[in-house]
Length: 195
Image 1 (cartoon, rainbow, N blue to C red):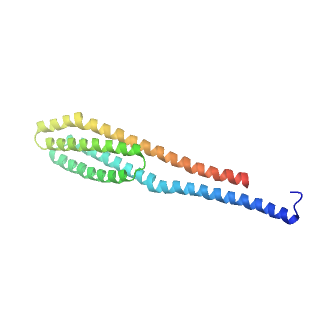
Image 2 (image 1 turned 180 degrees about the vertical axis):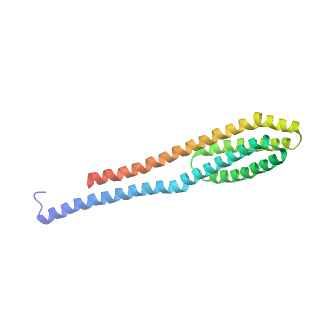
Image 3 (image 1 turned 135 degrees about the vertical axis):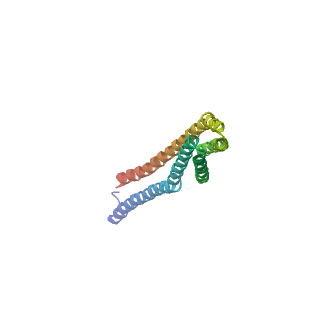
């Protein structure tokens, strides 16, 4: 460096500064790209999937409430409540299809298959209880027994699977947050070191 002319020293100094600026710009763009990817994933997967889970959970609770009220009411009220449960079941299936098609995690896909299987069983038992409750007082008692022995255990299974899906979604959201934080930290480190 001592043997360089003033012009050479200036060129070398500006070259080093330019090189550092390029590193800062490149790393900043890389960090921003990482944060942008996480934002896209958040808007494409996390928020819609959490909304779908909430709607599924809401429909399940409505169906379960209708079933409890239907087996403890009179036949006319029970019919309306069973029809309401059937309507909520249709909404649930529609929302589950949207949720299922928007998955990127294999664990979620497996849990959804399990969820659908138990949900199909729940639908069969719910219809069986509906048919039993339409007839006589004895049938109504049979419907109540079917609710306790068949329907209630299925709802427990459904709720357990749903909580597993929520847990998987929460872990994915935390991972997204960690990825965004890591991208931000990388940008800050480079700015601190080079700046």
